[in-house]
Image (cartoon, rainbow, N blue to C red):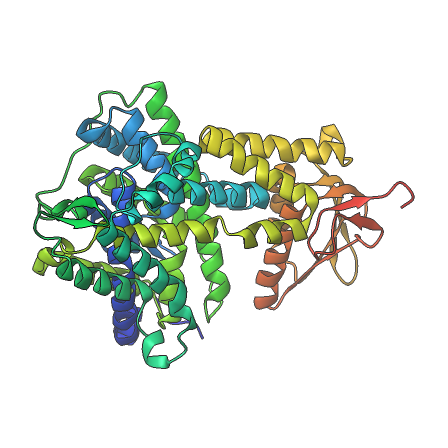
Length: 532
């Protein structure tokens, strides 16, 4: 039986939720600081967002086990917003206005029940976008890990400077950065239960603070090594010169209607919503009680959180997958674990802010580089290739265009590439947005026949037809008449089938026996051959 919710859930499960909230707080603190600084926001802005995500968003329909806060996936958009809207404090305040309006747009999405958007975007496009974000994070943070300030430029330009940064690395800071990165890589391989209970980011921060003390980074100093003079000091530590409440910054609305602001409003709203919904769906899969989050309600909670965070000087937030997965693994029972993690953050920042100022930037950069490597891991390329060659083409096109331009253009070109691939593969032009759907009732089940094509761009029509059959115990989706069925639709139908099975109902997909698959993957794109 699923745990109780609301005050009853707090009364029954406060012990386990406090423990999981504490463990998530240990992970959230350094990540929030690092993400904020990488985004061009003040370090404390990341904590502000995490606090709003826990103390406010929790009560507006947040998915039961998700943790809301700043996310690495929005770093690129936030940093670009600050830079393109004026830079420095001016750009930061104007970016806050974009965050608030994006939150209002997300609230409109939730009101219009746009939670289904999470199923509409092709998986190859989403993964290509995330891989590009990973590369961009690496291109910017690898230099900080080495203690070097690169010449400003685009991601590929920054990557090209890495050999020079390795040559000119600052030994003390690079020691901290490399040691932090090695801890993050090696920690999962330490199988002792005692060590596994300690989150790797906590170890990274502890080691980083200790090394900063050894190297006396709290005071400016210089030293000679191999004939080179190195100068280091407090600038290598987290710059936290104001308290949480003194750091509250109001948005600047002066250019909110400009084309540049509107671009970032759309990017914050779309990318943030998609990431948040995908994270919430992923957490549903590992929820021990198989609870299904209402994506519309969770999007509403995210929207309200973004409005409040933006008004206080914080970053945009999403339902964040790393912290949410850790929350589940720590034994969380209800949404109160998200609230408790924010309470611990508030207590820590209020009581020992000096400790935050002892954290080396190189340690935070190592965490972000590690996150970037996971987003752009070669495993993602291999996984996409196994689904089908056309998937890999769309993945790579999305990634490269995003790196060369920006996220919005990259996603748009990726979607266009997917549509072109489908048209080449036999999708009728007239079915891009509207498949043919017929419902036939048989003694054993209701059969929903989909014709022409079943692809990401017309899945909304298919989903609506399935939703009308929500009270039926047995439904069959017959795809035998569809000339093309893509991976995104097959994946979405599989998730729906799993949900129906947990409810004691049956949703079966059939009719693909005569179709030709693009690979051996069970959910690879299926094309009907001329002879079938």
